[in-house]
Image (cartoon, rainbow, N blue to C red; front, side, top):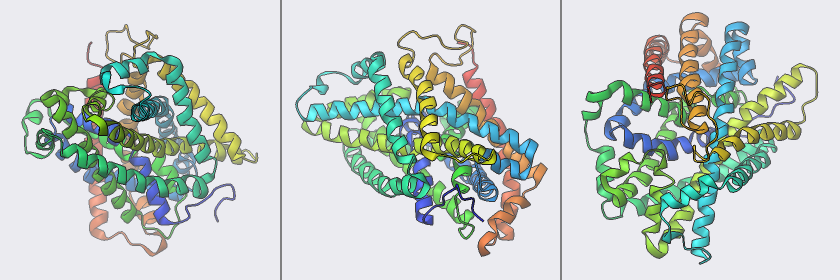
Length: 474
């Protein structure tokens, strides 16, 4: 019987919209284009697709099954299978969302500011096009009160959504937000690919070229693997938490496939929205823009569009804000569910509004630090900055190193070994087979090979590449 303090998805469509919304976030729109640009384009895309099939599907199926089997927070769900070893994995899965939220909300806040700038341009209040993207972004980074204030706005919006619960809050928002997000993305893509010179960006993405992996295969693999986890929201507690609210009658295999395919399509579409436009303006230099590609290069593209620039700027950055919120509410829900379940286990009646409020305030405290740091523009102290190792030149990069660089790939590696060799893959098969669904012998054999051999090997290589990249001498 369902626990009284827990909700449930109103429909499988609502679950899919929320889970795809969690996956379709800044990982797709901010991170995917610039990492694809930095890692050769086409070979990065191919490795990403292969990893999504062999590794992404395996881990997502495991996490959905663990969540639905446990019926609780990420920690409770892992502990239900094995209290000690599962407890360690559950704690590791709680670290990632907490740290990711410290910079995810700040990146969303920058997009809120860009919506305001382009809207001011449209109304004739401020001439944004007279200022380069680099100048406007630099102003955002150094304006600490504005950065902290806009971060608070993003977190406050998430609070208002999450306090409504699973069905009336998160599901309802995503049912409206995801179709709106898709429509805005299509509009931006149409304009992006029709810009003069945009064809070079499309060629960079889709024309076969394997030279980059000849020079640094591990580096491209690590980048594609890290991006896959960030894009699909794996190893950060989201899929386990959302799976815990899923009915036993729903197919985990079908839902896993739909989520991965949908997210991958949106990631590629995000690349088509960003890279062709960037190539149209900056040519080959666009692929070297790095993390600033979204905030600097794209704003320059909108500035160069003339009278229609602010309209596309508003649409694009509003789309990014929406994507950021769909992922942020999922990350926050991981922590909220954990606290609510802990209070319930202790015999205390959980007040969802109070729990959500306290969690959001704690997140705001760590996010305010990242916002005040301004990507290192304001001279704040950063841990290990003087150690001679590249653990990040700013708080955002430091938080990213611990979460995406270490905790996520390590958690996925240990989880695949745990399922494959310790608790046994039959745990996943039994949960997948609930509600009259069957896991065919062929699919189960494929799953065993992936969870025991392919996924651990790939994750070990990805983890090695991530650590090698971050810990290289400065």
